[in-house]
Image (cartoon, rainbow, N blue to C red; front, top):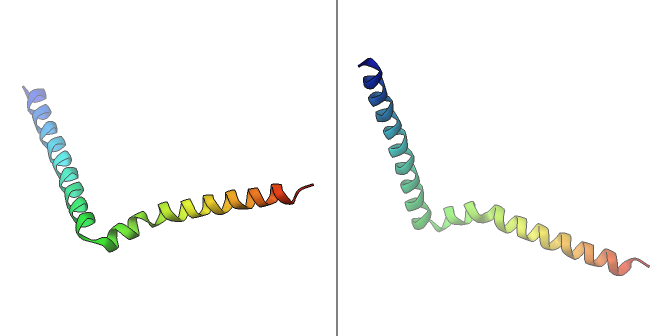
Length: 68
């Protein structure tokens, strides 16, 4: 019987963890939808990476054009 009780308690704790994770995700999603500044801040690394890749590609092309 004790094993069944502890299993029920574990599942309850697991449920609480999952519910908290879902709640945090929903709060974060709502903040992301409402705040354009937050969206910009979150997506900034993506655009910085894309700019770095473009400048790298451009430097590679220029290096090939200047080689004999």
